[in-house]
Length: 157
Image 1 (cartoon, rainbow, N blue to C red):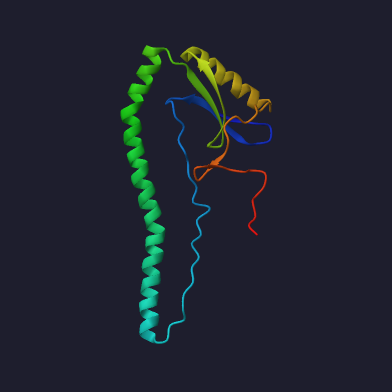
Image 2 (cartoon, rainbow, N blue to C red):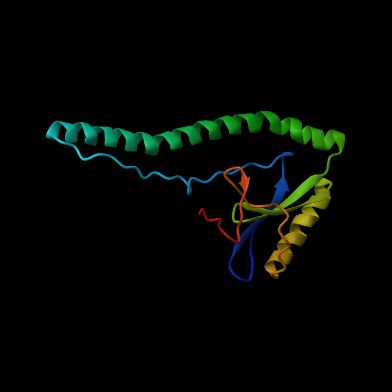
């Protein structure tokens, strides 16, 4: 369920269907600048331009191809495990978790119990967000597999 707080921020409240949380990665931190030597002849310049174009094309396409491959693999894996996870929740009586996300980034989660209890918890949490009563963050921000330090950046000396 999508909810907007009084400040205009979009939040999402939903059940977490599987026992794990997806780790989203960002390509914001990639450093793609490089250096090179000045070519001596026109042939070196042409070869250099061709190599630069090939490297740029590979640098642009490779991450998309890899992300696409791994996303497809993850979706297939998810669809294979989802029935097992749901059956385990129903048969073994495992409780459902309600998750609040700021945009698409996980913010907090609570264990809600049964399906009906989780539905009530979703609506209560959505109403609290609409009123501006945002719960504290219980899920740390993760960036590139590490907990992100949101308040300050470390500098190197």
